[in-house]
Amino acid sequence: MSAPVILEVAANGITTRTQNPAVPREPKELAEDALACFAAGAAIVHTHTHEPALPPVEGAALYLDAYRPILAQRPDALLYPTVAPGRTIEERYGHTALLAEAGAIRCGALDTGSVNLGAVLPDGWPIPMDYVYTNSPNDIRFMAKVCHEHGLGPSVAVFEPGFLRVVLAAEKRDALPAGTLVKLYFSAGGYLGSGEPIFGAPPIREALEMYLAMLAGSRLPWAVAVIGGSLLDSEIARPALERGGHLRVGLEDFFTAKSNVDEVERARALASEFGRPLATCAEAAGILGLPSRQRGGSA
Image (cartoon, rainbow, N blue to C red):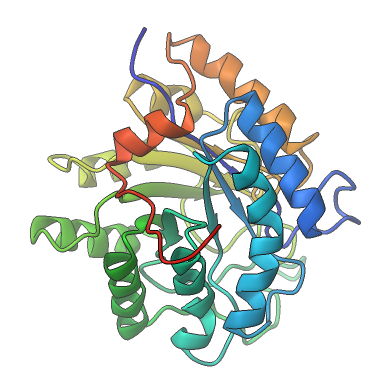
């Protein structure tokens, strides 16, 4: 058999039940859905809470309501939260440190740039809004420092080529926290609003080749994802598997999918065409080189 495929499931994001009744929102639903995904072959599950703007302590408690039942059955589960809304990076990222101290996570989101996550309206111009998903250079340094200090493997979302340049520069200088996974995001639809996206590259082979050219010489594991569409039906999934890449699926990215578990099963079938099994949580931790879970508290 060839090298295992790390499969990450983005369980919910901002997808609503109006958009898809199958999306898990409450902690109990998230726990049940994540356990089903792990049983089907997922190695990593990424979640948002249904109250994203809570302060760090309250936000971490809400994540733990979902993560504790998962870890009780699957102590090897790899889980991580999103970067929350807030005025400061301490407010936006404080829950991550608290979850690490509780021993609940071994990975942490590290988004290395800023991006307009919108779409085009029928008049040909972007959705009218002032929101930008912003991660300043100081924000990036803060997230990396938290990952270093708490032994978290950064899960890096690459929305644009500049995001990857930050990561490669840090790798070149041995500054990256251990366990880094680079996820190359391609856009088929808007994340905030439906329609033609105004961010990222389309999910075409040429765009994948550009990113892989940038990664030449890097030892970092990488995965592909499609925002606003189906990764598994795109033209980049197969070449990514052929080239040793990993996959991210789920209702956060593809809100019209049947379910998260169905996406895991479809990913397993596709990977098997290339002789690549889905990695277990333990295998994924080994491939990434994740530090052992910190034991500052009880999960």
